Image (cartoon, rainbow, N blue to C red; front, side, top):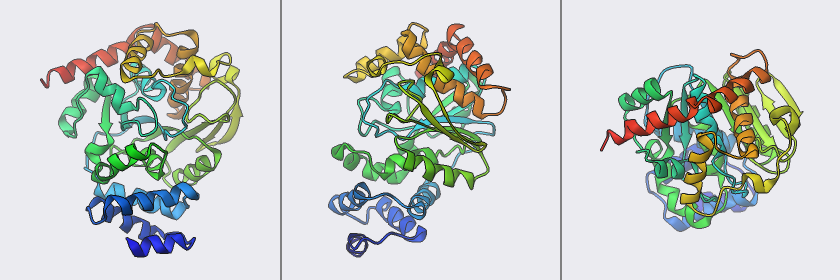
Length: 333
C-alpha cells in the first residue's frame, strides 16, 4: 500500500487494473486501517477518474456474493453524502413502486454521513438482513420487494465500514453502492449529489445498455427533492425539470428533514407509507417513485407513472407491501 500511496501523493491516478487490485487487497485485509484511511482520503481531495471508478466497481462485483433473483427488477438508490439529512425518500419510493406491481431489489447500507441510511430504517422496521437467494425470492414473490444489505454481499465493505463511519464523510464507497447491486437490476433510478458525478455515472451506465435514470437536484440533493430544479440524465437523453413538472409544486428544505434519531426516522417512514405524511413529504416520495416507474418504459408518460404511484400510496398497496415484507421476516424468528 505504501507504494500505491506514494504514487497517488505524486498526483497520479490509478489504472482500472490498479484500482481493482487495490480494492481486492483491502477486502483481503492486507492493509491496516491507517493505510486504508490514507487511501480513501486521496479521493476526498480530488475527483475520482472513470478508470478508477470502473476498477473499484469490477472488484466489488467480482468479490460479491452471487445471486440470481430473476429479470425485470428495479432499484432506487442515492449515493448519500449530500449532507442534507432528508427522510428515507428512496426507500419509501421503492415500496410505492412495489405497490404498483414492479418488483424491486433494493440495495442499501447504513448511513455513513446521515442519521438514517436505508439499512438503518429497514432494521428499525424489523427487517432481517440476509443473503439467502431462496428467501429473497420469496420476498419478491409475496411482497414485490426484497432488501439487499450491501455488507452481506460485499466483503470489502465490511472491512471499511468502521473507517467510513469514523470519518463521517462521503467517500468513493458512496459512489460504488449504486453500481454494485448483486441482483443486477434491469432498471435503475440513481440519485447523485453533484453534476460531475452524474456525468461519470451517465458515461458508465451508457456502456451497460440497461435502462437507467440519474437525478440530481441542482441545489445539492441526491434525489428529486422538489426544493428546486432537477437535472435528469437517462439512456434516452438529458433535461432539466421543475418541481411543478415533477411533483405539482415546490417544497421547502425543512419539509423533507429526516429527524434527529433512528427512532424518529422510522416513525416518519411508517407515517408516510401509511399515506399520513404531509403534502410535501408525499409529493417528494411520489416524484421519485414516478421517475423510477417511468424508467421501466412501461408507461407512456411521466404523468401516467405519477398517477400509478399516487394510486399505490393512497390505496394502501405500498403499505401492504411493507407489512407483507416485515411479516415474512418475523417468521424467521
